[in-house]
Length: 386
Image 1 (cartoon, rainbow, N blue to C red):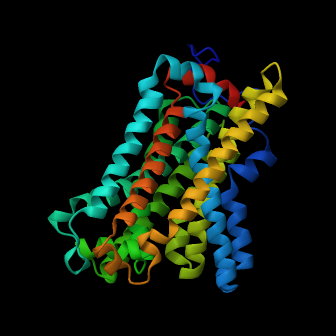
Image 2 (cartoon, rainbow, N blue to C red; image 1 turned 60 degrees about the vertical axis):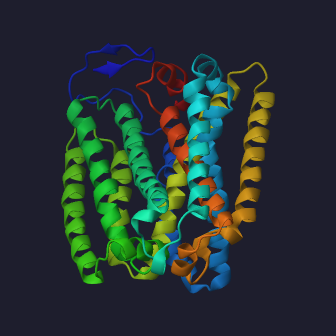
Image 3 (cartoon, one colour; image 1 turned 45 degrees about the vertical axis):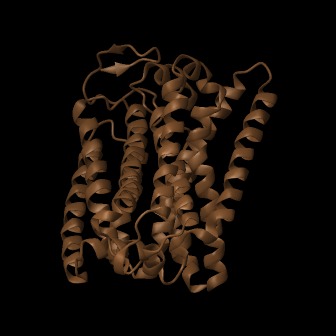
């Protein structure tokens, strides 16, 4: 079935190559820079080797990460909660588009404050009394991997639509592959590749796993990843209506855990940054395109675009200031992180609650913005991506 712009469906020959259809979301250059950034960013970092340039280069990388992460986080949140694109939806369903985000943030803050004033961890280890901190970490990690899986599947879906890949097998192959790679393979490989880092050690204090066991599990995950990646690349490549940019994006998904596992730790961590940056660029570019195209349809496009830039820019600036203000209380910045986490002050709990709330609201708004099963999104958001 082929979905029309109005949302109706008409029959189409299964696997038939579409006539005069571009495989790109916008253009080869635009897609290569924004959507497929995971390829060229890795090449830059592999050549420059920022981890060999000393503390200053690493500091610039971290500072850039904070700013870019903030812009990414609020790109979709602003669009859903504040932009005129969703004004009608907010009026008709205020609970879904205003109430739920507010409730998510309030609950996250309450959990963070509880962690700050609740029971400390004896010997820096989890106990049943520390359920609040365990729940906070669980929300962080499950939200992170689920969100990445959703975005990867969403990008593949955009490329599927461009090449009229509307069969159920097309959709299921992309869905199962992204779920497998992001929700199964990546967590296992991360635990091994980042074994010595604070968050990993904190998790291991509750569920002790030797490095050898982590290595064996990661080997198994890598074997599954290689087999699954080869399978879906062949499946896509043999289609009469195959998508070249989709093949590139599938390679990015496959490349991530393989690099973390096989490349020396320095470059493995660099690629972790690269993968995050490329993830952020996808969200930022699509949100910008939505708001820009919406502004261009108004009577005064320049004024409409200026309002968006001022409003979104002001929100990102305020959020960045909050991040820098709260950063000294973030518990993982201390070298003796286990001891710090074992005796979290209230300020650190507030920081963790704010960080969790910002991310969870972003995850929710990102899902609301690109949930094309929703008639409003299909009718009002879909055309703005063209």
